[in-house]
Length: 573
Ligand code: ATP
Ligand code: MG
Image (cartoon, rainbow, N blue to C red; front, side, top):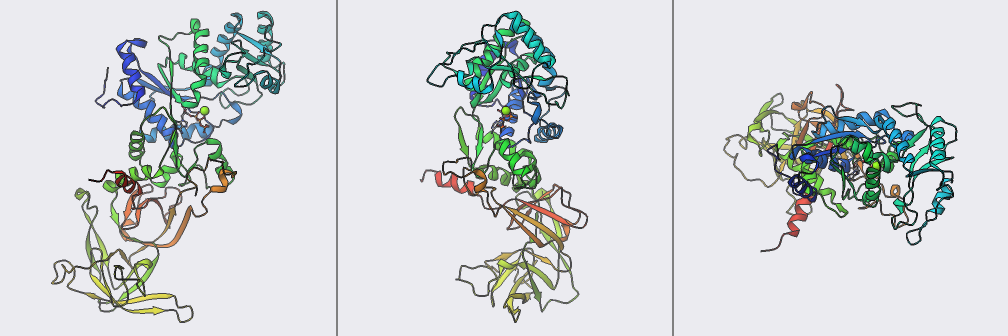
């Protein structure tokens, strides 16, 4: 039953759910979960999993839990737990009162495991990790039984209890499932269920010195939470028989009404970035980026700081869809989504990133005119604002060229005219240069007083229009321009023998410290977003902006490479 008005997603997982609902499986319930391991910040790949799990629940009148898979104590940190919660909320999803930790179930899991041993389905093994690997066999050869495989139930129970009591050193013994060392699926060759590990857990402290393995804790946690559809990424497909085995063995002691089903989908990969938490953590810890929220990072906190909106990220996740085969998505699609969103939402303002002084010699010295400027031509409801114009202004250095290459250069040059956006037409009369270096210091121009606002020549057609700011009114700002974090499209591909770090883009960050922005940006709220005319979309950096300094991050340029690619793909008519 679809209890919301949201259209049902069209993907293979929704199709499975449709069939399940038809058959009244799980009593017609849909209950999913998003199960991050708190060992790093969430990234755009997690956003896909979040949108999928919470989205399926919403569309089917179901529920979605947030569950921290914290079975791996040495790596977990409270900072990650907190960042994960705020990222999921920021994306627009809500777990209500259903936030859980796998560690909540350690006691229950222990009890189930004792039952499992009593049923002869698990044994304590004294082989070392290396020996276990040797006994495991290969993809083409079966494994060999561990010499400890046939211990009696009593001995196994005794040893397992003593493992828990801390009588053995880390790694001295493990508890293994007794399944089949000759199984064609290596995951079924008596996998380890519990290991001894003396590490302080962020929630259970030093209560435990044995911890369950993910593959064992996960199905049981799903069952305890009455999850119906346990969605995970493709690499777990080979683990599904173990997931089902765990449920089969302990089913008698679970209260679940219904039974969770594991369903695998293709993880998101994006060009020009890496997505593994291990690699992202390495970039942070070794200072290749300024932190998890560095605006170049594919993390949700990085994207948020950069200026991405939750709407754009959800739109992206919708567009990439859910597939059963791995692929790499072009990062240009993500950029396209934020560009589309900000095109409607972002007020247009004028900012000069690399200023060139322009003196308008025939403009009255102390005069200031407040020009009407439209806030967003794509969204007239956003109204207009006033922008001050005066005798001394700044334009972009690249909007002037002393010797323009050809007639197609529609910017300012000696003797040529441009229109200043929302103001007059000016003509370059004279260039002032540094006598020593030849560097251009300033331009002297004249303006056509009739060329603006209903004046006699206001309709005069001029090819080039430039943005500008009034020197006396402009505010100083720092602007950070980002490029892809990596120069390589697929930095994970180490086929060339190079580590992914060798493919970092040395020019991924350009800091412009002498920028000037129009005065309407005074006191701009951290996190607010604008279109700087002709320069792209920018966001007020929430961390480094202070009362004394405005800092802007460029979210994305105006050039839509994705739209171009799409156009190129359209069949010609
Ligand atoms: P890593 O291997 O980088 O540590 P992970 O998959 O172990 O990542 P988890 O914290 O276990 O990270 O992931 C939580 C959930 O998010 C899992 O259900 C996982 O399948 C999903 N997920 C992780 N990465 C991606 C991705 N790139 N695309 C889609 N879903 C993902
Ligand atoms: Mg994981």
